[in-house]
Image (tube, rainbow, N blue to C red; front, side, top):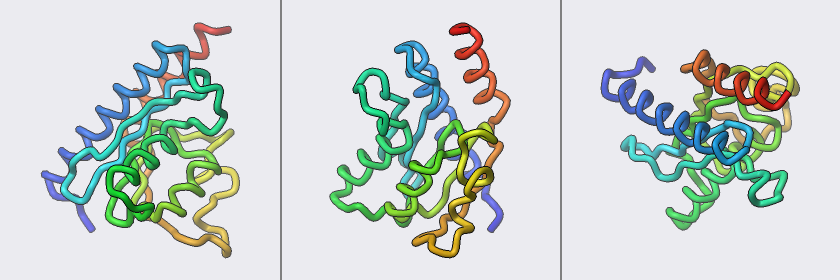
Length: 157
């Protein structure tokens, strides 16, 4: 299905918000990854950046936090009419969680050949035992997302 100008504009707004969350995460000393869950009307239901260090919780990835918050807001674990927008290709944990939350679509920025699990690594949604296969698209604002990550890690080396 081709995107209408309105849905394209909503997608840009969602990625802009995810990038803002990634920048805020970096300012807190977290790996700069941000995620947003968008409802069917384009409204942002939840937005988070990584909080792994802050919470001392290896599962506190931006995507998981955003999906948990959106599910809590809705009072249901099913987000079947929602889109997950993330600044980085989701890892295996986050991709599997998106399947369990029944996310309709995943849109991500930077590709992650090392840790990604959508188009890289295990390609989770291509596996025969996959419970739910969301539509997905990668590379949206990939240069901005990748630059945030590169700059973050360059400063720490």
